[in-house]
Length: 180
Length: 230
Ligand SMILES: [Zn+2]
Image (cartoon, each protein chain N blue to C red):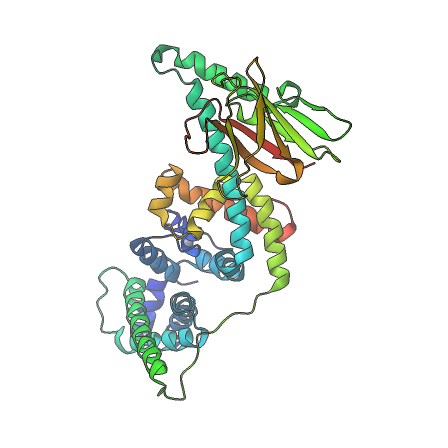
């Protein structure tokens, strides 16, 4: 498989297949990143497509300071910012009762009860076996960011990430085959 | 499955999922996600679980209960270690540390537990001897059918004939309402404090003593204990 640099080189030279591959790659990632920030599935799709369109228009003439991915990510962030500003304006119009009919509500996901049951069962096992993960997760639930959690747990950032990674691996293993 | 292309950034993965990164770290990791197949697939695969892990109230409650139990245990052990840590003679720290280790080993072994429980009145009450600042040593296993618990402990600062105030609080504070049990003191300085067995749920507690409800200075103790499920 070609690297992004190789694909980019081919796409700039006019290779349409390479171009399609690049934008297919970007689109799925952008949807995920946008969804995380705007909490709206359709909104995330719109943002990702809009970002890809802008990137498509400009990438051949652009000089990338750091990397193509970092530049593309910057475009996405700008689109997310624009979308959030529009949503804020929509909220204001909602309050006034004169919104356009095309607007969408922020979606609420249905909870998969079976998955929740499995997750709770595994989580109990993991938390009992890995108390530091329990304490880290609890602090995160209370809104603490990595630096504050490290201070509270008296661990280095490196160790904090290791604690989280171990907890996650245990959780995934348990959800996979029931064992830690 | 492919490997992470930048493990130094990839290690932020779970912190990113949990929304625990600073804005700068988030940006760094998101650019990484655009490039790294491995991390992107990992995030996709665990997306629903993370939604629950971060947004579900039952999940949050489970985590909080587990973490608070750990905190209580740590604070008890911390008290024990602080008490045994020599302040004026730093050169004997090594000896003290060894003593603490030995104590913890003994405490961990059920054969050496110093708590004593006995049935006092035909299944009506269970007596538990408490040792001050001995955290794990003070264990209460509620016997079935027992209605009351009598905590017995040596209270050096108590004055026979005077009333004393006793209070039992759950750790972390506020999990259960505080209990203000009735207590008595004999001429040898042994205090006996009675509580309803039904008032004590499995968990960590601290029993404190003071001259009165308004004067919180300790007469003796505190006495940490743990109630284990039957
Ligand atoms: Zn990676």
